[in-house]
Amino acid sequence: MSLAMETSPSQGNGDEKPSETVKIPDRLLKRDQARLEEAERRKDIKEGRSVTEEKSDFFSTTFNTERATIDELLSICTEANRENATKILEEATVKTQQLQKFLNDSMMFLTPYELRQAQATLQVLLSTISEKRDDILPKKKFAFKSRNVKSKPAESPSTSITELPKSASNRDTDADAAVTPVQCVFSNVDSQVLIKRADEIQQQDVLLTHLTNCKVRLLGSPSTLHIKHVRDCEIMSGPVSSSVFVDQCTGSTLAFPCQQLRTHNTKDTQIYLHVTSRAIIEDCQGVSFAPLTWTYSNMDADFAVSGLDKNRNNWDQVDDFNWLAFDTPSPNWTVIPVSDRKTSWDDLVPASSE
Amino acid sequence: MGLLTILKKMKHKEREMRLLMLGLDNAGKTTILKKFNGEDVSTISPTLGFNIKTLEHRGFKLNIWDVGGQKSLRSYWRNYFESTDGLVWVVDSADRLRLEDCRQELSALLTEERLAGATLLVFANKQDLPGSLSKEAIQEAMALDDIKTHHWCIIGCSAVTGENLLMGVDWLLDDIAARIFTTE
Ligand SMILES: Nc1nc2c(ncn2[C@@H]2O[C@H](COP(=O)(O)OP(=O)(O)OP(=O)(O)O)[C@@H](O)[C@H]2O)c(=O)[nH]1
Ligand SMILES: [Mg+2]
Image (cartoon, each protein chain N blue to C red):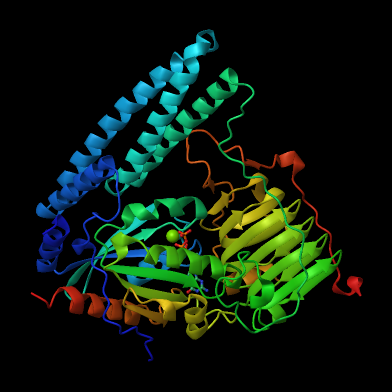
């Protein structure tokens, strides 16, 4: 075993660095101090739980009081009250930001449930502020998210180079240069039918990238599947043992069984899914889901190869990482209505593309 | 001296360590944590917040924090830095398209003052995948040789097979222990 170990003795030590050199606002120092004290108390008491509860109590009391104040500010912030409204809105915004900060600083004491609830509350406050702002100051649109999904045109280096991109220089990380022949890659194809059989993809990590207007069939069980920079495609795959990672996909239809689905920067895409743990979306719009209906002759055998549970499908439990309000559904994804679901799929014969 | 020193001393009596596990989404952090703990890894979902596990290993009490790596969660990472003894950076060795992203996130972490005293273990995960890059390639892509501020080590591993997980954690514990338990 060769451990690449750095032996230089230099050891940063957080303790010995008071912050004289850097100017840190008092407010932050105080908060940091408070946090350290809290951390100490936590350690001090053998049974850490009681302190956590206490802290968590303190958190919810403070959080709710602040939230009520902001709610109140927002309620008096009406068009009738226009001259003051701007100032009040400003105050509400600042207070909401402080509340966000307070939440961030308290995170380590909170249960995931409390955290999500608090984040949901903040989401609501932020959108209310946004709406108010639109009402009162119609000209200056206040935008929280300006994530327009732009798909970049495909640059075309399709060559397989075994070298890694050496650090920095290129900020765009999509450097396809890092693709080596060991990985199964299908890239830079326009308007074709691509059919891959088990002998090519079985338990391989497969990458589909820079495809436009293609029909892809992966008739086997990939170990993992990456789909990136894809437009107007129909991509189907046999059972994927671990995760499917989708990024920058537009106007496409996807179908596969997998353990996890992670969807990013994707727009107007339908996904026919069998997922044994969870599907998530991040920075997506117009993604819709339905249970998997596509099959092929050897699918059962490939299910066995993949190790996926055929009887467990959480296709409609989608977590949107940009939408933590779990009591209101995310606007970024929908369930495809039963009547609109595709039930028959083109039976592509491998020879047909030749 | 500072509260942190006191904190550390107290912690050391209990032979307790705090490990923070970070990395891009899909790297395999949660899978590593569960595998290490002997749990089922087939039901793991992408992490929405964080997981904490307290384990006993070689007489140490390990508090392992596994924080979600999705882009929208990365700004929260800093909330977990405090009192970290060991940073475990997990890389998906088969995700070639995001290596640069991965390098940048790591190098940003290493400039964090609150992580200054932490030992760094890099897991080049998913070595079981046929298309994965070797640990040497990951070492280069992450520019590990440029790190002068932290003790570090890279281990190629697979969370699915469990290969080398123990070796990585043992190295980390040894390095931390040598640093903080023996000086008193
Ligand atoms: N083949 C293979 N797959 C792995 C390995 N480790 C993790 N995976 C798979 O990779 C996917 C992501 O794993 P997770 O553990 O959820 O990743 P994570 O780093 O916790 O992701 P976030 O919670 O989003 O930050 C899952 O489908 C795992 O089964 C590995 O060593 N080999
Ligand atoms: Mg996770």
